[in-house]
Image 1 (tube, rainbow, N blue to C red):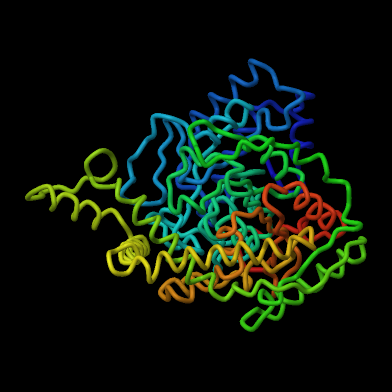
Image 2: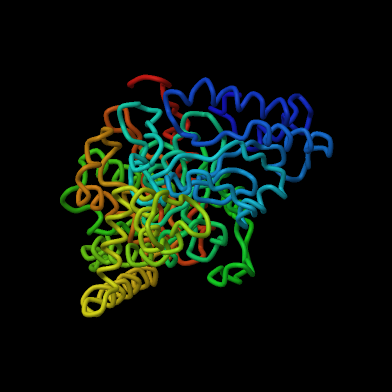
Length: 487
């Protein structure tokens, strides 16, 4: 099955009128992954037997004509637990971990009849922006296999961009859905913090993490968010706010919407082609009837420092559970309990994860907490206030998703500070808990460039409304990569 130029609606029509069965569709999808993924390395695990069994059960039951997801093969990022299907978070410490339960989102999509064909590659424990930090393989960008796909949800984004699946789930802690969506030319949504349950998501930064959908177009993205959003008794940080139908306002257009472009996001260090893409997008929105003006988010310059202190501190706490005792990797030939802890964690964690554990432990330690973690939390509040002030007068914020198009594999991975600075445009959205979506908006030397639309808390409706209007007016999202080679 070639998913290029397909949509949930077109696939669902074929399933409903029985021109294709769920089992046939799943077989074609698995075959397609086998043919393509040798060049891309998007998948860590394929569940052929389980997927085909699910598909046959759906066929026997019959396709739900009112449910666009019924019978749809889908990919899931490997930090979202799946019952009976290996979940590693791309780390050696969880190399052979098979969960005994489903994450809430896994359970929700399963009940709606989606078929999880496999788990996608990622930066280990979602710590990275290029999917080069996986313990098992490096994922390649379908547009140019010498380039990174972004991260940490690079496997999910690459799988969708390469036409291996129509949709995938990722997670976003500081841009990990939106940045790879930009690098690979697909649509990636980070919902408002609390909109989607985090229960069953292997935690990186608990106050920042959000699961979200990655798709080929905006309408499909909204449909998938409909499926996974909502309160969950297992997750006390999940919101009790009513979940609207995110597809309901797709065709309302942007006439009368007020859109702001933060001057701080368009400053020095932004690639010229990326900057021009944002300006061109602004002109498109003006043509469609929106007003676009410059705004200011003055504390943006402190975002990278605040984010890496907060996220690393939370990671240091969350990763304490991987101790070689209860589950996961256990070192051999140890002398005592302390030796077991040290060896299991030393062998199991990669360099980037160790780096963030050390940074977080230092930031939380006695004598440094006030100077680092407390100060970062105060900066976070200032950044939230900046967004609140803008949203008093504006409906949306338009900004570049990443400072540059996709860069070369191996280019930045050995320079942590450069890698961290690549998140400068996405992480403010996580610190403020806002919804943000990257949509394809241009090209630079044959590589996709995305822009992000940022909305008020729990206003994904307006984000999707504007994203769909832009998508219908342009054809950037319709263009597809030349597989297996450079463009």
